Amino acid sequence: MGALYTYFDSKDTLLMMILGEVSSAVSSALGCPPASLADDPVRRLRWLLETHVYLTETMQPWFLFAYMEAKAFPKEGREKARRSELATEALISDALADVVQRKQASVPNVELTAALIKPLLQDWYVKRGKYRRRGVTPEQYVEAVTGFVEGAISLRRGMSR
Image 1 (tube, rainbow, N blue to C red):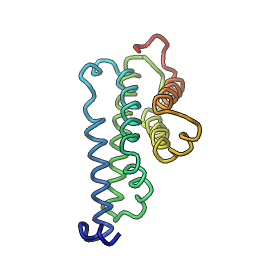
Image 2: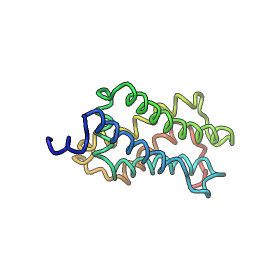
Image 3: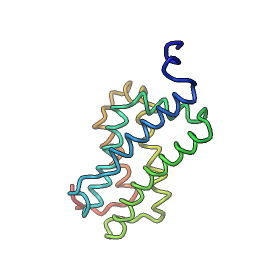
Image 4: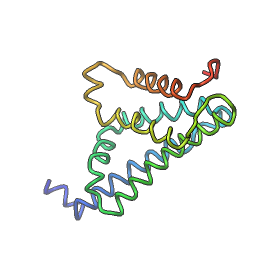
């Protein structure tokens, strides 16, 4: 630990650096969906769910650390963490709103539904051990979450795959 503080002047500085990296990774990975998904909100929603799970799989220790330490962040860090989570929810919400606008699904409250989806995505990195013990792969988790979400929003069958 002593050597760590050779590079960081305080625990708060370290926490903020990690939070910054996690927030940046989320923004970079989820903020620019492939152009081919622009006119297909169902596929864009699926892409968001899948990309989020794979991103957190790749960076699991960083995401878990940021999630678990959020309460210890200085006020600025807690606010940044909150904004990052809301930004992810907004991406999901936008895709859901597009799905509803195109009459491909029924979602009575888009923002609340996006807020409910976010913990499903967080569960993958927060409770990774539970899924590892059950032999659940990232692919299986993506499939399960996607199926659950599509069932919950009453996705019209026959939508693009």
